[in-house]
Image (cartoon, rainbow, N blue to C red; front, side, top):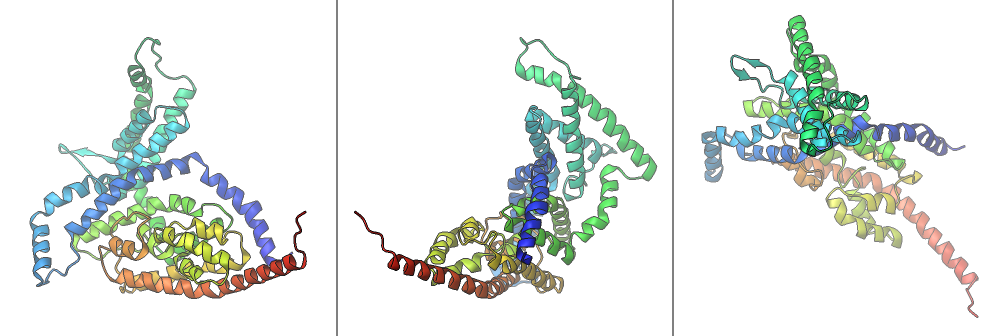
Length: 439
């Protein structure tokens, strides 16, 4: 048995079942749905950073830049309000989204489940002192707390409903009123468990639950922003996709909490005028590692347009426009790349090499870091600049990654092209030797 066949067997019998189980696990799906539901608010909130912190030097003498900078400084407080009510409270949207997703899974009222999850988060993450509520953990610092409390509240609601521990009203009572009474016991249970727990942890450690969670996860959050973490996550994504599994959904579902926490830290540093602390964020993943889609196949789409094989040239025409917007299923399944041994090496290594180049360049200060959340369909050079507050260096880095991708894909494409042309020639020869006769 060849090495490739052994690898395929391992993927089919070991990796695929495990990845399939993980991708269909209800909590993974709920976390993914929570981030998706929060995404529009976070994108708009991030976009506002462009207006709040214009991409000009503070000592610029250009009249347009000077006017924009002065406007931003004068109305900084007013401009920050929409940002604070979107990115600044991202945990609100995430909590409700996770609760609603789990509510649908358990056939509970999604609205009530989402609101219960939201209340559970506020119980532990919004300490009240001196007549004021602290908002410290409403942004990225409270993401892990939001995930845990939303899952706990939803699971508790489902458990109580499953065991008929609920208030049932006569059928004549309107549905909305009946649902309000049905959730009374879950609300009492959540308050009676989370609030005392939070007080106990605070009295014992001096930290409330969100602070304690971030303290415990600090090494993991730090490790998630390293080159090994990038390479491992990219490798897993590529291996799963090569087997026909949507690896990006699984990897982003795992990495999203870390990305959002790091993004919040970068935005806080930007607002304070400090050095940005983190590199590996979603903008880095989308615009350096997934140029044209998973495997960075946009350069490959351009190469396909000039292929001598009719099949590949046709796929290139079909896939080049979607690839601009990071949709590359026509390339992946039409070429095909999925389960094609000729493309395994470039498909796996291209994004890993791009990741290494982009990480090192950013670490050395040559490339601006990510401070904004962008839609994943944004074309790579534009998205890379947008994510870094419209800096020029990410565009250059993105173009370098595209060139590297094309160089790596080219020899494998030519080998595959020769194989297809040879097959076409053999097929034509057979047809000419055995012409079809029609009676």
